[in-house]
Length: 144
Ligand SMILES: [Zn+2]
Ligand SMILES: [Zn+2]
Image 1 (cartoon, helix red, strand yellow):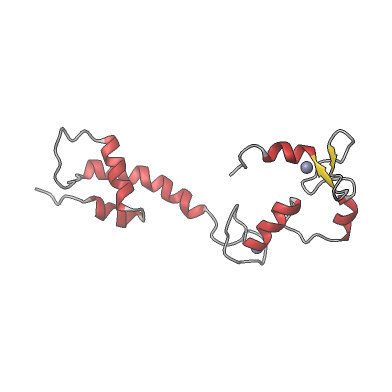
Image 2: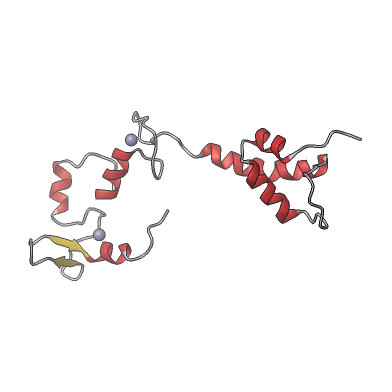
């Protein structure tokens, strides 16, 4: 009888957790009530490798460092480090908010929507403008 492979072996080989390998096996394989340890033959192991091999490649492609050139800090969200993510979140660009942006900010919101009369809310408390389009989008879950 050839050596059988355990979910542990496959998980280690594929760089995924044993529990997700087991879960996938439970979903894919009818064990007919058998509850002992998983004994995976080459055929099933091949299917596991095919499935998790694809997702492992996708995981490997995900940047772990900030994608902004010459930044190299650890990415926290959207492939950006904390600082660049905050910039992006604040004004829709990872560039520093410079004088040109300040000029532009008079006519457009930080996310590039034009401040037209219809799209502008003015808060009486501080006189600052708010973008209606952004307010509308914020009521929906953020795209992640
Ligand atoms: Zn960065
Ligand atoms: Zn806006």
